[in-house]
Amino acid sequence: MERSGDAPPDEVPMVLATEGQHGPVIHAANRAARIAGLRMRARVVDMRALCPDLRVEYADTEGDRAALDRLVLWARRWCPWTVADGPDGLVLDTTGSDHLWGGEAAMLVEMETRLSLLGLTAGLGVAPTWGAAWALARYGGVRQICSADQIASQLAPLSVPALRLGDETVLLLRRLGLKTIGALADMPRLPLTRRFVRADLPDNPVLRLDQAMGRLAEPVSSVEALPRFRAQSRLPEPILDPAPYLAALCHDLCAQLAQRGFGCRHLHLAVYRTDGEVSTVNVATSAPSRDADHLRRLFYDKLERINPGFGFDLITLEAGAVEAVDIVQTRLDGGADGDLQLARLIDRLTARFGARFVTRPVLRESHVPERAEGWTRAIGDTQAAASQVSRERPIRLLEHPEEVRVLYAVPEGPPVQFIWRRQTHRITRYAGPERIAPEWWVDKPGTRLRDYFKAEDHTGRRFWLYREGLHDDGRGGDPRWFVHGMFA
Image 1 (cartoon, helix red, strand yellow):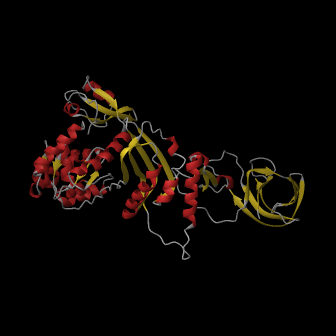
Image 2 (cartoon, one colour; image 1 turned 180 degrees about the vertical axis):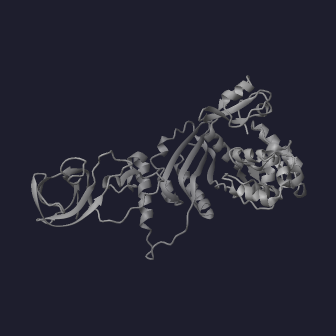
Protein backbone atom coordinates (compact mmCIF):
# COMPACT_ATOMS: atom_id res chain seq x y z
CA MET A 1 0.00 0.00 0.00
CA GLU A 2 1.38 3.38 -0.98
CA ARG A 3 0.81 6.72 0.60
CA SER A 4 -2.09 8.75 -0.67
CA GLY A 5 -1.51 12.26 -1.92
CA ASP A 6 1.03 13.55 -4.43
CA ALA A 7 2.21 10.18 -5.73
CA PRO A 8 4.85 9.92 -8.48
CA PRO A 9 4.02 8.48 -11.91
CA ASP A 10 3.58 4.70 -12.00
CA GLU A 11 6.76 4.19 -14.04
CA VAL A 12 8.98 5.96 -11.46
CA PRO A 13 10.44 3.50 -8.92
CA MET A 14 9.83 4.78 -5.40
CA VAL A 15 10.38 3.34 -1.94
CA LEU A 16 9.64 4.34 1.64
CA ALA A 17 12.57 3.92 4.00
CA THR A 18 13.04 3.46 7.75
CA GLU A 19 16.19 3.58 9.84
CA GLY A 20 18.06 0.27 10.14
CA GLN A 21 21.18 -0.85 11.99
CA HIS A 22 23.45 0.16 9.11
CA GLY A 23 21.52 3.03 7.58
CA PRO A 24 18.11 3.41 5.91
CA VAL A 25 16.38 0.23 4.73
CA ILE A 26 13.44 -0.24 2.38
CA HIS A 27 10.10 -0.37 4.19
CA ALA A 28 7.71 -0.31 1.21
CA ALA A 29 8.02 -0.09 -2.58
CA ASN A 30 5.72 0.65 -5.48
CA ARG A 31 5.22 -1.67 -8.42
CA ALA A 32 7.94 -0.10 -10.58
CA ALA A 33 10.49 -0.54 -7.79
CA ARG A 34 9.55 -4.18 -7.28
CA ILE A 35 9.84 -4.84 -11.02
CA ALA A 36 13.30 -3.28 -10.93
CA GLY A 37 14.33 -5.96 -8.42
CA LEU A 38 14.34 -3.96 -5.17
CA ARG A 39 13.98 -6.09 -2.05
CA MET A 40 12.19 -5.30 1.19
CA ARG A 41 14.44 -4.58 4.22
CA ALA A 42 17.46 -4.17 1.92
CA ARG A 43 19.75 -1.18 2.45
CA VAL A 44 18.83 1.85 0.37
CA VAL A 45 22.45 2.50 -0.59
CA ASP A 46 22.72 -1.02 -2.06
CA MET A 47 19.46 -0.68 -3.99
CA ARG A 48 20.53 2.68 -5.44
CA ALA A 49 23.38 0.87 -7.15
CA LEU A 50 20.79 -1.43 -8.72
CA CYS A 51 18.37 1.40 -9.61
CA PRO A 52 20.11 4.82 -9.92
CA ASP A 53 16.87 6.76 -10.56
CA LEU A 54 15.26 5.40 -7.39
CA ARG A 55 13.14 7.94 -5.48
CA VAL A 56 13.31 7.60 -1.68
CA GLU A 57 10.99 9.05 0.97
CA TYR A 58 10.99 8.30 4.69
CA ALA A 59 8.04 6.28 5.97
CA ASP A 60 5.67 7.62 8.61
CA THR A 61 4.88 4.32 10.33
CA GLU A 62 2.69 5.82 13.04
CA GLY A 63 0.71 7.81 10.49
CA ASP A 64 0.36 4.74 8.27
CA ARG A 65 -0.96 2.71 11.19
CA ALA A 66 -3.54 5.36 12.06
CA ALA A 67 -4.58 5.62 8.40
CA LEU A 68 -4.96 1.84 8.19
CA ASP A 69 -7.18 1.85 11.28
CA ARG A 70 -9.43 4.40 9.61
CA LEU A 71 -9.39 2.40 6.39
CA VAL A 72 -10.59 -0.69 8.30
CA LEU A 73 -13.81 1.10 9.21
CA TRP A 74 -14.10 2.78 5.80
CA ALA A 75 -14.00 -0.65 4.08
CA ARG A 76 -17.20 -1.72 5.83
CA ARG A 77 -19.11 -0.23 2.91
CA TRP A 78 -18.62 -3.64 1.26
CA CYS A 79 -19.20 -5.97 4.21
CA PRO A 80 -19.78 -5.68 7.99
CA TRP A 81 -16.64 -7.62 9.04
CA THR A 82 -13.21 -6.06 8.47
CA VAL A 83 -9.87 -6.12 10.29
CA ALA A 84 -6.31 -4.94 9.68
CA ASP A 85 -3.91 -7.53 8.29
CA GLY A 86 -0.42 -6.53 9.36
CA PRO A 87 0.92 -3.06 8.56
CA ASP A 88 -0.28 -2.94 4.94
CA GLY A 89 -3.39 -5.03 4.40
CA LEU A 90 -7.07 -5.61 5.17
CA VAL A 91 -9.06 -8.80 5.67
CA LEU A 92 -12.75 -8.64 4.68
CA ASP A 93 -15.30 -11.42 5.21
CA THR A 94 -17.51 -10.91 2.16
CA THR A 95 -19.64 -14.00 2.75
CA GLY A 96 -23.18 -13.07 1.74
CA SER A 97 -22.15 -9.59 0.59
CA ASP A 98 -20.70 -10.18 -2.87
CA HIS A 99 -24.12 -10.57 -4.54
CA LEU A 100 -24.94 -6.99 -3.53
CA TRP A 101 -22.19 -5.83 -5.89
CA GLY A 102 -23.00 -8.12 -8.79
CA GLY A 103 -20.69 -10.98 -7.82
CA GLU A 104 -17.11 -11.31 -6.63
CA ALA A 105 -15.50 -10.07 -9.84
CA ALA A 106 -17.61 -6.91 -9.93
CA MET A 107 -17.00 -6.37 -6.21
CA LEU A 108 -13.22 -6.48 -6.72
CA VAL A 109 -13.49 -3.94 -9.55
CA GLU A 110 -15.52 -1.67 -7.25
CA MET A 111 -12.92 -2.03 -4.48
CA GLU A 112 -10.01 -1.27 -6.79
CA THR A 113 -11.81 1.78 -8.20
CA ARG A 114 -12.69 3.17 -4.78
CA LEU A 115 -9.16 2.66 -3.44
CA SER A 116 -7.60 4.25 -6.52
CA LEU A 117 -9.70 7.36 -5.91
CA LEU A 118 -7.98 7.56 -2.51
CA GLY A 119 -4.57 7.34 -4.21
CA LEU A 120 -3.99 3.75 -3.06
CA THR A 121 -2.71 0.88 -5.18
CA ALA A 122 -4.10 -2.44 -3.97
CA GLY A 123 -3.61 -6.12 -4.71
CA LEU A 124 -6.92 -7.99 -4.35
CA GLY A 125 -7.67 -11.64 -3.82
CA VAL A 126 -10.75 -13.66 -2.84
CA ALA A 127 -10.40 -17.13 -1.33
CA PRO A 128 -12.09 -19.37 1.26
CA THR A 129 -9.20 -18.94 3.73
CA TRP A 130 -7.31 -15.97 5.05
CA GLY A 131 -3.93 -17.48 4.16
CA ALA A 132 -4.95 -18.21 0.54
CA ALA A 133 -6.41 -14.72 0.06
CA TRP A 134 -3.22 -13.18 1.51
CA ALA A 135 -1.06 -15.16 -0.91
CA LEU A 136 -3.16 -14.41 -4.00
CA ALA A 137 -3.43 -10.68 -3.22
CA ARG A 138 0.33 -10.24 -2.82
CA TYR A 139 1.86 -12.91 -5.08
CA GLY A 140 -0.90 -13.71 -7.59
CA GLY A 141 -2.14 -11.81 -10.59
CA VAL A 142 -4.64 -8.95 -10.80
CA ARG A 143 -7.93 -9.49 -8.90
CA GLN A 144 -7.51 -13.19 -8.16
CA ILE A 145 -10.62 -15.28 -7.32
CA CYS A 146 -10.24 -18.77 -5.91
CA SER A 147 -12.86 -21.37 -4.97
CA ALA A 148 -12.45 -24.07 -2.32
CA ASP A 149 -11.47 -26.78 -4.82
CA GLN A 150 -8.93 -24.49 -6.55
CA ILE A 151 -6.80 -23.52 -3.53
CA ALA A 152 -4.12 -26.17 -4.08
CA SER A 153 -3.79 -25.56 -7.82
CA GLN A 154 -3.71 -21.76 -7.61
CA LEU A 155 -1.25 -21.65 -4.69
CA ALA A 156 1.10 -24.32 -6.08
CA PRO A 157 3.12 -22.04 -8.44
CA LEU A 158 3.53 -19.26 -5.87
CA SER A 159 6.83 -18.88 -4.01
CA VAL A 160 7.04 -19.97 -0.37
CA PRO A 161 7.04 -16.39 1.06
CA ALA A 162 3.36 -16.31 0.04
CA LEU A 163 2.68 -18.49 3.10
CA ARG A 164 3.48 -15.50 5.38
CA LEU A 165 6.86 -16.90 6.40
CA GLY A 166 9.83 -15.03 7.79
CA ASP A 167 13.17 -14.59 6.05
CA GLU A 168 14.90 -17.30 8.10
CA THR A 169 12.23 -19.87 7.29
CA VAL A 170 12.23 -18.97 3.58
CA LEU A 171 16.02 -19.25 3.45
CA LEU A 172 15.93 -22.68 5.09
CA LEU A 173 13.23 -23.93 2.71
CA ARG A 174 15.20 -22.78 -0.32
CA ARG A 175 18.29 -24.54 0.95
CA LEU A 176 16.17 -27.69 1.06
CA GLY A 177 15.11 -27.09 -2.55
CA LEU A 178 11.53 -26.07 -1.62
CA LYS A 179 10.95 -22.85 -3.55
CA THR A 180 7.21 -23.04 -4.27
CA ILE A 181 4.12 -23.86 -2.24
CA GLY A 182 3.44 -26.83 -4.52
CA ALA A 183 6.88 -28.30 -3.82
CA LEU A 184 6.31 -27.87 -0.10
CA ALA A 185 2.86 -29.49 -0.28
CA ASP A 186 4.26 -32.52 -2.16
CA MET A 187 6.80 -33.27 0.58
CA PRO A 188 6.05 -36.16 2.97
CA ARG A 189 4.40 -34.60 5.98
CA LEU A 190 6.08 -36.55 8.81
CA PRO A 191 9.75 -35.68 8.07
CA LEU A 192 8.79 -32.11 7.21
CA THR A 193 6.99 -31.74 10.54
CA ARG A 194 9.92 -33.21 12.45
CA ARG A 195 12.37 -30.94 10.66
CA PHE A 196 10.57 -27.72 11.50
CA VAL A 197 9.56 -28.71 15.00
CA ARG A 198 13.28 -28.90 15.83
CA ALA A 199 14.10 -25.67 14.02
CA ASP A 200 14.21 -22.54 16.17
CA LEU A 201 12.09 -20.41 13.84
CA PRO A 202 9.45 -17.75 14.50
CA ASP A 203 6.94 -19.46 12.18
CA ASN A 204 6.18 -22.99 11.00
CA PRO A 205 5.62 -23.64 7.26
CA VAL A 206 3.54 -26.75 7.98
CA LEU A 207 1.18 -24.71 10.14
CA ARG A 208 0.97 -21.92 7.55
CA LEU A 209 0.31 -24.44 4.78
CA ASP A 210 -2.56 -26.03 6.73
CA GLN A 211 -4.07 -22.61 7.38
CA ALA A 212 -3.90 -21.63 3.71
CA MET A 213 -5.39 -24.94 2.56
CA GLY A 214 -8.25 -24.72 5.04
CA ARG A 215 -7.18 -27.74 7.09
CA LEU A 216 -6.60 -25.58 10.18
CA ALA A 217 -8.88 -22.80 11.40
CA GLU A 218 -7.45 -19.29 11.78
CA PRO A 219 -9.78 -17.20 13.94
CA VAL A 220 -9.56 -13.42 13.72
CA SER A 221 -11.41 -10.84 15.82
CA SER A 222 -12.91 -7.91 13.96
CA VAL A 223 -12.45 -4.45 15.40
CA GLU A 224 -15.67 -2.80 16.49
CA ALA A 225 -16.34 0.83 15.63
CA LEU A 226 -17.62 2.89 18.53
CA PRO A 227 -21.03 4.37 17.78
CA ARG A 228 -21.31 8.09 17.19
CA PHE A 229 -23.76 10.12 19.23
CA ARG A 230 -24.86 13.50 17.93
CA ALA A 231 -27.76 15.83 18.56
CA GLN A 232 -28.58 18.91 16.52
CA SER A 233 -31.05 21.75 16.40
CA ARG A 234 -31.94 23.50 13.14
CA LEU A 235 -33.35 26.97 13.74
CA PRO A 236 -35.96 28.69 11.55
CA GLU A 237 -34.09 31.99 11.83
CA PRO A 238 -30.62 33.07 13.07
CA ILE A 239 -30.16 33.61 16.81
CA LEU A 240 -27.31 35.02 18.92
CA ASP A 241 -27.44 32.86 22.08
CA PRO A 242 -27.41 29.02 22.05
CA ALA A 243 -28.18 28.71 25.80
CA PRO A 244 -32.00 28.23 25.43
CA TYR A 245 -31.42 25.22 23.16
CA LEU A 246 -28.63 23.60 25.18
CA ALA A 247 -30.90 21.74 27.64
CA ALA A 248 -32.85 20.01 24.87
CA LEU A 249 -29.64 19.06 23.06
CA CYS A 250 -28.14 17.54 26.22
CA HIS A 251 -31.28 15.54 26.98
CA ASP A 252 -31.46 14.27 23.39
CA LEU A 253 -27.78 13.25 23.40
CA CYS A 254 -27.95 11.58 26.84
CA ALA A 255 -31.05 9.65 25.78
CA GLN A 256 -29.06 8.24 22.85
CA LEU A 257 -26.20 7.32 25.17
CA ALA A 258 -28.50 5.64 27.69
CA GLN A 259 -30.26 3.64 24.98
CA ARG A 260 -26.94 2.09 23.90
CA GLY A 261 -25.45 1.81 27.41
CA PHE A 262 -22.69 4.39 26.92
CA GLY A 263 -21.38 7.49 28.67
CA CYS A 264 -19.08 10.21 27.35
CA ARG A 265 -15.97 11.99 28.63
CA HIS A 266 -15.97 14.85 26.11
CA LEU A 267 -18.65 17.05 24.62
CA HIS A 268 -18.24 19.19 21.51
CA LEU A 269 -20.69 22.02 20.94
CA ALA A 270 -20.60 23.66 17.51
CA VAL A 271 -22.64 26.61 16.25
CA TYR A 272 -22.78 27.27 12.50
CA ARG A 273 -22.98 30.98 11.68
CA THR A 274 -24.85 32.39 8.72
CA ASP A 275 -21.59 33.79 7.29
CA GLY A 276 -20.10 30.28 7.02
CA GLU A 277 -17.93 30.37 10.16
CA VAL A 278 -18.12 27.69 12.86
CA SER A 279 -17.54 28.32 16.56
CA THR A 280 -16.89 25.42 18.94
CA VAL A 281 -16.82 24.88 22.69
CA ASN A 282 -15.41 21.71 24.27
CA VAL A 283 -15.86 20.38 27.81
CA ALA A 284 -14.59 17.21 29.51
CA THR A 285 -15.59 15.02 32.46
CA SER A 286 -13.50 13.04 34.91
CA ALA A 287 -15.72 9.95 34.53
CA PRO A 288 -18.08 8.74 31.78
CA SER A 289 -21.40 10.53 32.20
CA ARG A 290 -24.84 10.72 30.61
CA ASP A 291 -26.46 13.06 33.12
CA ALA A 292 -28.03 15.79 30.99
CA ASP A 293 -28.31 18.41 33.73
CA HIS A 294 -24.73 17.89 34.85
CA LEU A 295 -23.35 18.11 31.31
CA ARG A 296 -25.39 21.23 30.60
CA ARG A 297 -23.92 23.05 33.61
CA LEU A 298 -20.39 22.50 32.30
CA PHE A 299 -21.11 24.95 29.45
CA TYR A 300 -22.34 27.82 31.66
CA ASP A 301 -19.17 29.91 31.74
CA LYS A 302 -18.06 28.92 28.25
CA LEU A 303 -20.94 29.99 26.00
CA GLU A 304 -19.94 33.63 26.27
CA ARG A 305 -16.74 32.79 24.37
CA ILE A 306 -18.77 32.15 21.22
CA ASN A 307 -18.70 34.94 18.69
CA PRO A 308 -22.22 34.92 17.21
CA GLY A 309 -21.41 37.28 14.35
CA PHE A 310 -24.71 37.93 12.51
CA GLY A 311 -26.28 34.88 14.16
CA PHE A 312 -26.31 31.12 13.66
CA ASP A 313 -29.03 28.75 12.47
CA LEU A 314 -27.57 25.31 13.33
CA ILE A 315 -26.33 23.96 16.68
CA THR A 316 -24.79 20.50 17.11
CA LEU A 317 -23.71 18.63 20.24
CA GLU A 318 -21.51 15.57 19.79
CA ALA A 319 -20.20 13.08 22.36
CA GLY A 320 -16.52 12.16 22.30
CA ALA A 321 -14.47 9.47 24.09
CA VAL A 322 -17.54 7.31 24.64
CA GLU A 323 -17.26 4.32 26.99
CA ALA A 324 -19.60 1.57 28.05
CA VAL A 325 -21.25 2.40 31.39
CA ASP A 326 -22.85 -0.27 33.55
CA ILE A 327 -26.13 0.53 35.30
CA VAL A 328 -25.46 0.20 39.03
CA GLN A 329 -27.84 0.39 41.96
CA THR A 330 -27.57 3.45 44.22
CA ARG A 331 -27.94 3.37 48.00
CA LEU A 332 -31.12 1.97 49.53
CA ASP A 333 -31.94 5.34 51.09
CA GLY A 334 -32.25 6.85 47.62
CA GLY A 335 -29.06 8.91 47.78
CA ALA A 336 -26.48 9.06 45.05
CA ASP A 337 -23.13 7.32 45.16
CA GLY A 338 -20.38 9.42 46.74
CA ASP A 339 -17.90 8.84 43.93
CA LEU A 340 -20.41 10.24 41.44
CA GLN A 341 -20.80 13.43 43.47
CA LEU A 342 -17.02 13.81 43.60
CA ALA A 343 -16.77 13.36 39.82
CA ARG A 344 -19.40 16.05 39.30
CA LEU A 345 -17.57 18.42 41.64
CA ILE A 346 -14.30 17.85 39.75
CA ASP A 347 -16.05 18.51 36.43
CA ARG A 348 -17.59 21.79 37.61
CA LEU A 349 -14.33 23.04 39.15
CA THR A 350 -12.44 22.16 35.98
CA ALA A 351 -15.01 23.89 33.79
CA ARG A 352 -14.65 27.05 35.89
CA PHE A 353 -10.91 27.22 36.61
CA GLY A 354 -9.35 25.13 33.83
CA ALA A 355 -7.92 21.61 33.72
CA ARG A 356 -4.40 22.54 34.86
CA PHE A 357 -5.67 24.16 38.09
CA VAL A 358 -7.62 21.14 39.41
CA THR A 359 -5.47 18.21 40.55
CA ARG A 360 -5.93 15.03 42.54
CA PRO A 361 -3.56 12.75 44.49
CA VAL A 362 -2.32 9.64 42.74
CA LEU A 363 -0.25 6.68 43.92
CA ARG A 364 3.05 5.84 42.25
CA GLU A 365 4.99 2.61 41.91
CA SER A 366 7.57 3.28 44.61
CA HIS A 367 8.18 2.15 48.18
CA VAL A 368 10.11 5.34 49.02
CA PRO A 369 7.49 7.44 50.89
CA GLU A 370 8.06 10.78 49.15
CA ARG A 371 7.86 9.09 45.73
CA ALA A 372 4.86 6.85 46.47
CA GLU A 373 2.36 9.62 45.85
CA GLY A 374 2.02 12.68 43.70
CA TRP A 375 -0.46 15.00 42.03
CA THR A 376 -1.95 14.84 38.57
CA ARG A 377 -4.67 16.61 36.62
CA ALA A 378 -8.13 15.55 37.77
CA ILE A 379 -9.28 15.30 34.13
CA GLY A 380 -7.23 13.93 31.28
CA ASP A 381 -4.95 11.48 33.11
CA THR A 382 -6.29 7.97 32.53
CA GLN A 383 -3.34 6.21 34.13
CA ALA A 384 -4.49 3.87 36.87
CA ALA A 385 -3.15 4.36 40.34
CA ALA A 386 -0.45 1.95 41.38
CA SER A 387 -1.37 -0.68 43.93
CA GLN A 388 0.22 -0.10 47.29
CA VAL A 389 0.81 -2.38 50.23
CA SER A 390 -1.42 -1.40 53.15
CA ARG A 391 0.83 0.07 55.85
CA GLU A 392 0.21 2.67 58.48
CA ARG A 393 1.49 6.03 57.31
CA PRO A 394 1.41 9.47 58.95
CA ILE A 395 -1.57 11.72 58.30
CA ARG A 396 0.93 14.48 57.53
CA LEU A 397 4.05 13.78 55.50
CA LEU A 398 6.66 16.51 55.29
CA GLU A 399 7.51 17.51 51.74
CA HIS A 400 11.20 17.30 52.65
CA PRO A 401 12.40 15.28 55.68
CA GLU A 402 13.90 17.54 58.36
CA GLU A 403 17.10 16.49 60.07
CA VAL A 404 17.07 16.31 63.89
CA ARG A 405 19.87 16.60 66.42
CA VAL A 406 20.19 13.40 68.42
CA LEU A 407 21.24 13.64 72.07
CA TYR A 408 21.45 9.92 72.72
CA ALA A 409 20.73 6.88 70.59
CA VAL A 410 21.05 3.11 70.80
CA PRO A 411 21.98 0.95 67.79
CA GLU A 412 18.79 -1.13 67.78
CA GLY A 413 16.23 1.65 68.34
CA PRO A 414 15.39 5.33 67.89
CA PRO A 415 17.13 8.12 69.81
CA VAL A 416 16.24 8.46 73.47
CA GLN A 417 16.13 12.23 73.00
CA PHE A 418 16.30 14.49 69.97
CA ILE A 419 15.96 18.20 69.24
CA TRP A 420 13.69 19.29 66.41
CA ARG A 421 12.68 22.87 65.65
CA ARG A 422 14.38 24.06 68.87
CA GLN A 423 12.34 21.71 71.04
CA THR A 424 13.59 18.69 72.97
CA HIS A 425 11.59 15.48 72.64
CA ARG A 426 12.07 12.51 74.96
CA ILE A 427 10.96 9.17 73.50
CA THR A 428 8.72 7.15 75.83
CA ARG A 429 7.82 4.30 73.47
CA TYR A 430 8.33 3.28 69.86
CA ALA A 431 7.64 0.61 67.21
CA GLY A 432 9.88 -0.51 64.40
CA PRO A 433 12.08 -0.50 62.50
CA GLU A 434 10.66 -0.71 58.98
CA ARG A 435 13.57 -0.90 56.57
CA ILE A 436 13.30 0.76 53.15
CA ALA A 437 16.17 0.10 50.76
CA PRO A 438 17.23 2.51 47.99
CA GLU A 439 15.77 2.07 44.53
CA TRP A 440 18.90 1.27 42.53
CA TRP A 441 17.19 2.10 39.21
CA VAL A 442 16.47 5.66 40.40
CA ASP A 443 18.84 6.58 43.22
CA LYS A 444 22.46 7.55 42.77
CA PRO A 445 25.23 5.11 43.75
CA GLY A 446 26.01 5.40 47.44
CA THR A 447 22.46 6.18 48.55
CA ARG A 448 21.94 4.82 52.07
CA LEU A 449 19.05 2.72 53.32
CA ARG A 450 16.48 3.96 55.83
CA ASP A 451 15.13 2.46 59.08
CA TYR A 452 11.77 4.02 60.01
CA PHE A 453 10.37 4.17 63.58
CA LYS A 454 6.99 5.23 64.94
CA ALA A 455 7.94 7.08 68.12
CA GLU A 456 5.90 8.84 70.85
CA ASP A 457 7.42 11.57 73.00
CA HIS A 458 6.70 12.53 76.61
CA THR A 459 3.90 14.93 75.57
CA GLY A 460 2.02 12.26 73.57
CA ARG A 461 3.02 13.51 70.11
CA ARG A 462 3.74 10.71 67.60
CA PHE A 463 6.50 11.10 65.01
CA TRP A 464 7.71 9.14 62.05
CA LEU A 465 11.51 9.10 62.36
CA TYR A 466 14.06 7.38 60.23
CA ARG A 467 17.74 6.66 60.47
CA GLU A 468 19.65 7.12 57.24
CA GLY A 469 22.47 4.62 56.92
CA LEU A 470 24.21 2.21 59.26
CA HIS A 471 27.51 2.28 61.06
CA ASP A 472 30.32 0.91 58.90
CA ASP A 473 28.10 0.51 55.83
CA GLY A 474 30.83 2.03 53.68
CA ARG A 475 28.52 4.76 52.34
CA GLY A 476 29.37 7.71 54.55
CA GLY A 477 30.01 8.58 58.17
CA ASP A 478 27.68 8.13 61.13
CA PRO A 479 23.96 7.61 60.51
CA ARG A 480 21.75 10.70 60.35
CA TRP A 481 18.24 11.06 61.82
CA PHE A 482 15.25 12.78 60.21
CA VAL A 483 11.61 13.53 61.00
CA HIS A 484 9.46 12.61 58.00
CA GLY A 485 5.90 12.94 59.31
CA MET A 486 3.48 13.12 62.23
CA PHE A 487 0.71 10.71 63.26
CA ALA A 488 -2.63 11.71 64.76
